[in-house]
Length: 153
Image (tube, rainbow, N blue to C red; front, side, top):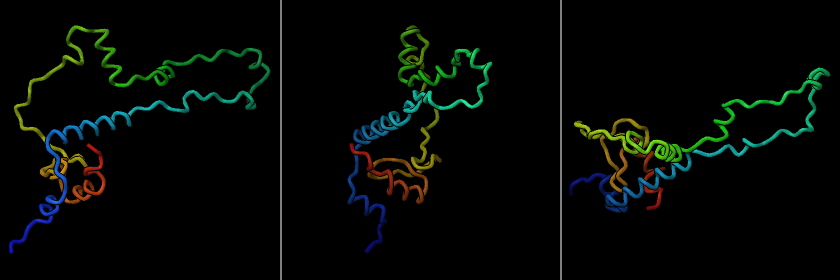
């Protein structure tokens, strides 16, 4: 009886995705990352209560109160735009090329590089069920425990 690889034996029992399902899964994962990436600060609009005592005020400061001016940093933080909003704004203000949407480069003459989905190092191996890349047995273990087939297709 020939000895067989445990990885190949386990792969026969697992569900293997076709290319279309892998692409859908990858797109869904990127969308989840995009949504998770940018959030407004829920505490940005909180105003301090006016009942808080001001201990450092003097009589001179009370009579000569100035209206606080807000810096440009305040407005940059307050009215941030997401990447798709910036791309759309650029397209509306500058419809003629070159712009972000029309920028293209020729395809590379070098072969495509593959990186580990766990640590980001160059990878030589592919997960059989989901098609994700990994570089070592340690990264394979992390991938199988936390990432492989965790997103529904």
